[in-house]
Length: 311
Ligand SMILES: O=c1[nH]c(=O)c2[nH]c(=O)[nH]c2[nH]1
Image 1 (spheres, helix red, strand yellow):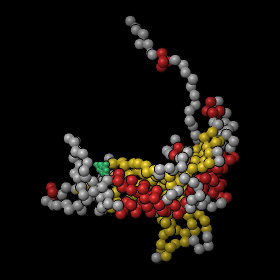
Image 2 (cartoon, protein in one colour):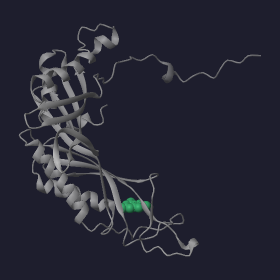
Image 3 (cartoon, helix red, strand yellow):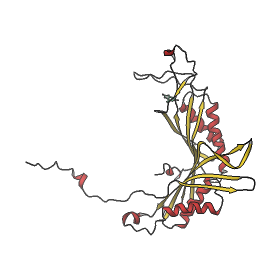
């Protein structure tokens, strides 16, 4: 005999209003390369740009009426068109131009988010001379910005990622609790390595973007190199503290520091000693140390961090 299934609790079956939640749309990872051809040398910029628009976009979702949808194809074209009208300048300036363009020209759009990554190329040297128009991709480090434009306001969070740092002295790690599962030896002399992702919020827009970026980067690198580290956590805080001390225009900084472990290899099976000179660099798993360092009394971050991650 067939039995009817257990009744489903009514609160799970009762019809409730179904609504559209938060949404945004845009073109992700538009690749833009510009060459400015000056008489003596060419200058190269290599950017990846993502746009995302928010606003009165219910119709396209609910009825398929696209009258308020500035197409993602148009957003991509706008990136190229604005780059063609004047030099892109600093990534923050270009992101602000793009974001302001979308909010100013589209009645239905009240928020634009623009992420820009800058990829580095170094001018090559040939016979010791800087070449006028040949470049080599400069490592993996990327300069980033995330700009939000809304109702006459704008917020800028700039940063970097894949800044790989390593030091062979000045790093200890000990004093941690040992339980029945702890095997990690204490160390007073270890290799410390990480790949820095950093994002910091500017409290206003009147900033010399490149100089500010260089100063923040120099703080991060300088502290990593010079601080005597008792943990990557201590290093994270010291890096953030140095940035906030150097840059009053930065309200807070967020850091993500993977611990790229360098483990001394046991050479005793080979009848050898390892005097802290031979390591295996392991890629996973890795410790991941993350945190924010904030300034008391910083300005309201508004929508600044809502850009990150993209959604
Ligand atoms: O700097 C460190 N912090 C940790 O929390 C940790 N944990 C670990 O295994 N090694 C390290 N190193």
